[in-house]
Image 1 (tube, helix red, strand yellow):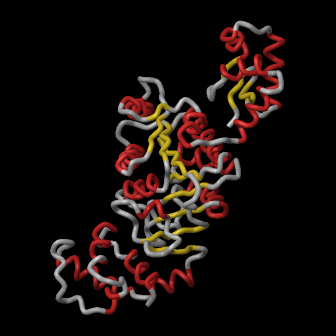
Image 2 (cartoon, rainbow, N blue to C red; image 1 turned 180 degrees about the vertical axis):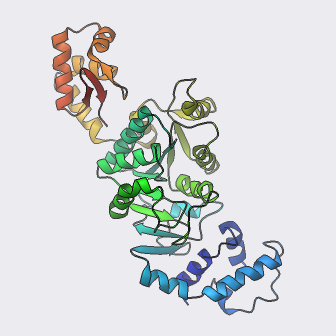
Image 3 (cartoon, rainbow, N blue to C red; image 1 turned 60 degrees about the vertical axis):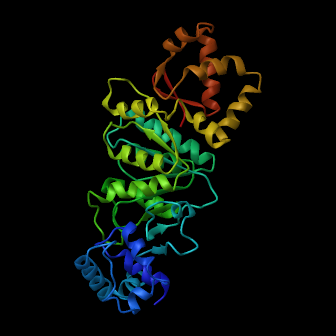
Length: 364
């Protein structure tokens, strides 16, 4: 039995979480000794109760190398890497409670690249969905890996945004990587497997149980250099990810919203408590030191002698649709013809787009 096989078998033991399992493994000089040594006299009182220890050993002994052989022979495209393997993400090694190993389809996030998590409400508004998509695209254009949980709403929108820029995105699941949950995101799941990765600490065929998702959130935050929160209730799964991020010393960004909107109360509370206020993708650039294709396009436009009119118009356009009449009122210095010309040039440059007759929004 190799070390990888031994770790793989331990990852299939559901009776003990990774924190206690790592304490248990630390009692041995080599993880393989768990399968070869006589452990009947071992004192495990400080780690787990003796009856639980006995049940756990029974599971391990019965499963043995069969589980690892099954993974290699039967699980389509699923790979495994243990905490001792050199490919195991370095960001996870510093966690207080790192996974024993990772099952994944596709590939794992690269240690040498910056990464950011985009998370938020499953029932986010259209504004929140568009913001998540925009931030995901912006980050991917900068070469930043986008990490999330593939959930409905903000999570999925951020990952689709990254994929639209042909960037890298990775989903951390609360179930086995052979299961697509939610089923509505099967196209996203397949795309991530092909161009990024789908990751879990749970072995294949493990269903998504309620307590799995708060635990997987610690992996999302640990794999990320910063966490971007797009709409969240005060009490939600999103906030558990934020708690993990803060405990891990990560920067947290929050998108502000209306004070009476339940979906924005979590973000507003985070800002009040000291999170970075997120007014646009450029805020991420200031912290992460990013230069994007969008920035390059803006600078080219500003250097073409078109700066004054286009810049005034662009500054008044946001992620929410705005009508030409409102733009005229806000700017106050342009005629209808000058505004129309500026809008046309910004559209050609790819900075804005029409979202309806006479309405304009910033491009993702």
